[in-house]
Length: 338
Image (cartoon, rainbow, N blue to C red):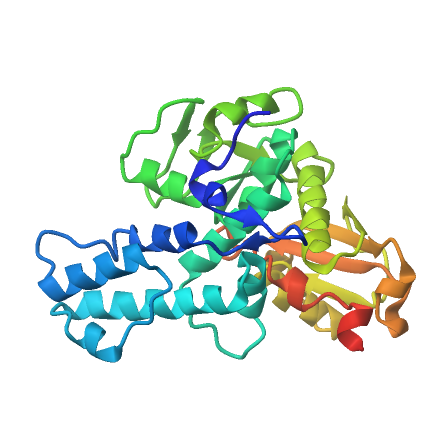
């Protein structure tokens, strides 16, 4: 079985009895090695001392005075932010519990980068042993922003950061070239697009985020994304669901919907309330899904047996920013209702 996503930090963690990732000292140390935290040549003695102490004992309590003694204001702020996040991880006990807990309050005080990193390592756990390369590439949507473009009636998704690097003139080797137009848009793509026939090429570049997938209805990559959504829900909620891509919303008045990003949430809310949605906004929807529960009893009693509508959209800049946490907070579970 090929290894994948080595940079996720999965190798620093071990599963507990429930199959979730128990927070380890080595995982906490990884945050101390980030460039925002690791001392540089100009770092003061207080900063170096604190960093060494935390590397030795990453769960160590840090007094306010130790932070105040750091000379550089940005470094002080970075430590405060990192330590707040560290304390969340320690208190939660598992990476999954920390991730889910971030979305239970009104305000999220964790940088988006950290949230995406948690999703990355959780999916590495969820997909451990996966032999379907398209599922792994589709799973990147959970923690990597994508640039959408239409080419020869295919709706293609490429990693936004990779596209931006090409636009800035950076060089990436490998599978073809991205030809990027002036404003950093994907423009046209001169790149082998991953599908069922050539998906194994992903294994050669699984941590480079430089492959492209078609996401339109009927594509193998879209069905792969459905399998990832099913696995994500099963891992967190312990329920079995079936997700399939659809070309249109079949129900004339659906019972429940979940937007997988901010744009989709707004569009589905407007449609639900009978508001007119102009065609330009509707065209931003890149995928529609139908979700059903394997067991009626797992759903809220008033919705038992109903199919759920899911949508994924790009914004006005053709960027897809998926919010997988919406599948945790908005799923109508019987247990949550109780």
